[in-house]
Image 1: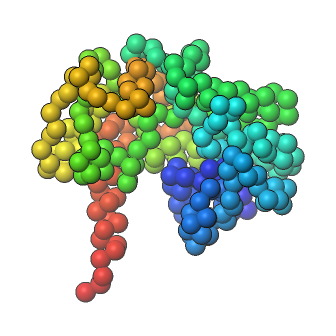
Image 2 (image 1 turned 60 degrees about the vertical axis):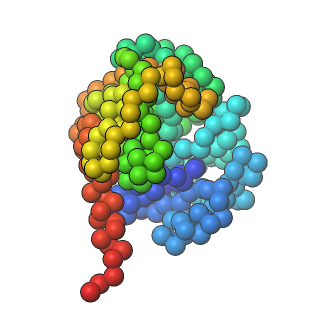
Amino acid sequence: MNKLFCFGYGYTCDYLWHYLEKIGGWQIAGTTRDPAKKAEMRSHGVSGFLFDYSSPLSDPLFILKDVTHLLISTPPLDEGDPSFLIHAEDIIRIPSIKWVGYLSTTGVYGDRNGEWVDENAELKPSNRRGTKRVIAENQWISLLNTYNLPLHIFRLSGIYGPGRSALDSVRAGIARRIEKPGHAFSRIHVDDIVQVLLASMLNPNPGSVYNVADDLPAPSHEVIAYACQLLDIPCPPLIPFEEAELAPITKSFYSDNKRIYNNKIKNELGVQLKHPDYKSGLRNCMNAEKHAIERLKPEA
């Protein structure tokens, strides 16, 4: 029996749980800051524990006992990753640990003026979010170097999937088509993140870093246009970036322009992307949502 523990049990961890449940042979536990989410997790068979930046696990040696796989997706603080800051000493004392994954971001590469970036590129973040991720990566790497923690780093592009895609922003009437010539975002469907994580868990290679992105970086206005086409909704007009009144956090996403190489997940892990571009991914989101609605309909 393998035992997975997730620090920061969110959207990606929930999808991973669904896959592991189908495979069988796994126990799963994780942390949340929300008592209601903890109750929801437990109703699904996932052991939930409260944890946040100021509240450590109540009994870490008991809670982490027999953990074989550890996934960290807690958002970092200015000082680094809270899971590391609070529980690094407990984690290095887990004798059963086989694999550790840290979910980072391609934001650690900063702005590359639209150039392609692989895992060997220098880390030079251009904003505070990316800087915090670099600090967190280095903290976990210190445990790899000092204690042989079986660490793997996954630098994720923009995550989307059912319930969290351009389809949802279009339906909500908040989608805007911002045009910044030459600018592109890399993305990754949650199904393919899970594929990568599972492949790594089955074939650990401590010290490895993986870019997790699809094959087609694209400007956001193209993605919004395709979502409108799928939903048969009129497409919002293009707004030049210079004229768009954007919130600071949104504006910061447009300050980084790079395209992410994903060859390593294919060559080393043997991953074949289920959704190699945003069109395939959005069609999947739409189909998944239709199936969910069908399941909720009362029987005749």
